[in-house]
Length: 319
View 1 (cartoon, rainbow, N blue to C red):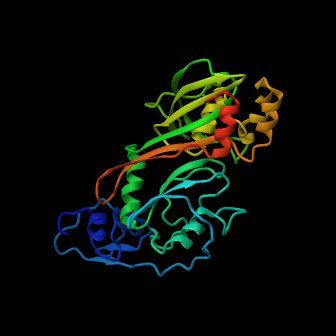
View 2 (cartoon, rainbow, N blue to C red; view 1 turned 30 degrees about the vertical axis):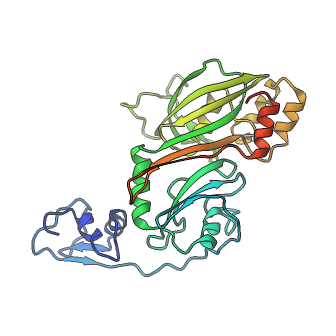
View 3 (tube, rainbow, N blue to C red; view 1 turned 90 degrees about the horizontal axis):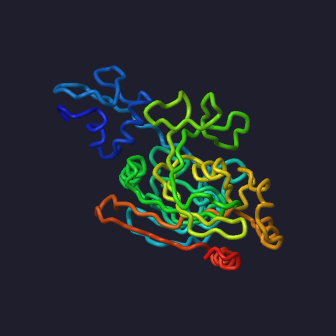
């Protein structure tokens, strides 16, 4: 351990196993170096005394949920699923025991639990109404490796969206800093400058907000609807929904971000009614690629829209 960072050193302890776990212990003052709390980056010297207090197992109220998952791939390290619209990823208000996490607990005993994790295995998330490809870690090392890939933006993510309104440009980038909406805590919004326009200078960030970049390509436009392919450079909460809504192209069915106010731009009255009747908004995570944490193989997964949405896309002339 001599010469290693403290977090790397204690990650070698079998019961800890990963740097993320080690950092969590250090930052929660469960690790003392020569009797003192220090930072994870401190280098360990010869004859240093390291004291580690492992937390007691935290009882969890999570219960298995008997729900058939659409598994695209599974091995000892991870699971890739096609998440349906309507399934919440992890427990939250109003959804305590009927989430993807609960379904995973029924599906497998091997999930990344850390030290009493309420979101076991969850590396990234999709909103309740968003369908598509999602990867889940089955152990801590996979969890750490996959999380790093999302953080370092080495994953590949493609989404499709049906938007209300006619897109002017066939392709482009949308950039801003995203933060909680100043008056509606359920929503997110771009941080605005004194000119009331979104701040976009990545080198001069505001005091709040996280940098977000969305690439888009218009695949088709018809009768007041636009069908878009989107590539995420960053993965902020509600990123695509905010960027499209603020660009005047709210996602069909996305009432939280103003779709109800734009529905009349759709020319056909029947199409308007079909959109109003949707139990979801029309955003789909179609492609996901990442490097397998253990084998280092590049893995790619693709899944089309659910069949009922495919029927509507063809009926509306978007595909």
